[in-house]
Amino acid sequence: MSDKTPANALGRKAAYQLADITKTRPQFGSITPRWLTRLLEFKGLDAGIYRVNRVQEGDTPLDALCSQDPGNREIPQGYVEYQSKPREYELSSIATIINVDTAVSDVYSSPYDQVGEQLALAVESLRERQEYQIVNNDDYGLLKNVAEGQRVKTRYGAPMPDDLDELLSKVWKEPSFFLAHPRAIAAFERECTRRGVPPASTEIAGGTFILWRGVPLIPTDKLLVDGLKNPKAKNGKTDILLLRTGEQKRGVVGLYQTGLPGDQSRGLAVRLRGIDDKGTASYLLSLYCSVAILADDAVGVLEDVEVGDYYDYK
Image 1 (cartoon, rainbow, N blue to C red):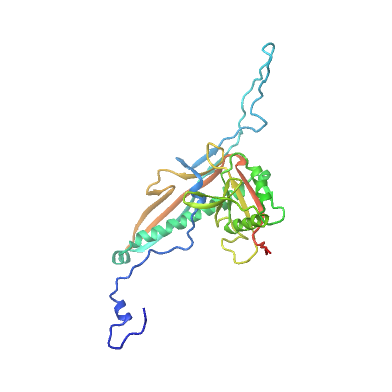
Image 2 (image 1 turned 60 degrees about the vertical axis):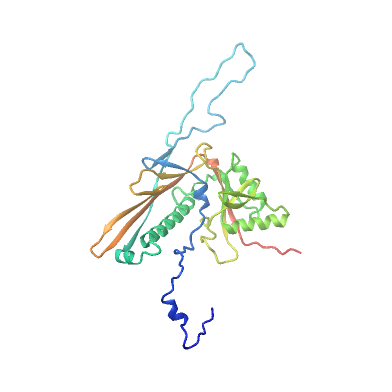
């Protein structure tokens, strides 16, 4: 629409005051699909503690007799020994407080409820932080708890098909998915293109992902590149994880608290703290979460992945 209107005609600025404008909800650009928390199996806890009992490892838990001689035979005896000090995972708390002037929320409540929008944005922030902690937490985070024998170095820096094959050899018992920064996935695709082996793709939970050896590569910006979610530099290093998930598969399991007062969703509680004498309403949002690795071979990591290699094709 042109800004030029005759001097004796109603103009845009005047008409704007009476216009019913179509408005969107607040757009939060930092929200991600959070595929990791969608694809993990979660276990609800009653008391906030999850003990991972393991047996003393060996070739087999018990000696056994394998014989075709029905005569004189001695069957081995024994029992399965447990680890005496199993690891216990305690839920961590992620919390924030939202304050809203009730006069503002009362008057400016159409077309969107101000309190509802503030709480929705706060919940998204907590869920983003939850996924970050699952990957990076110093106590229970996946990167910090990969067993030493499950760590693989890249051969030449860039993530090559050979590197991902080596990672698959570490998590070979029903691997569920790779987890990588989008730039690491792009770097892997370039290496595949260079070798003439473009990966196939598949759809999972409404998203499209590339596959390597039938295992999907799931993107997340919580696996940082040089310590950043959105690095500006062309080069940078990151890690690629490979997970086996699920309690039945002795894999990785997400943890959350059940039965919370003010429970809104998995492990999340929203509570009204009160309204002060100035009419400000205060809401406490608490999210309780952790993640457990049930067996050492449930997680592997490809380290020092360079994301900045590019090629010119003739």
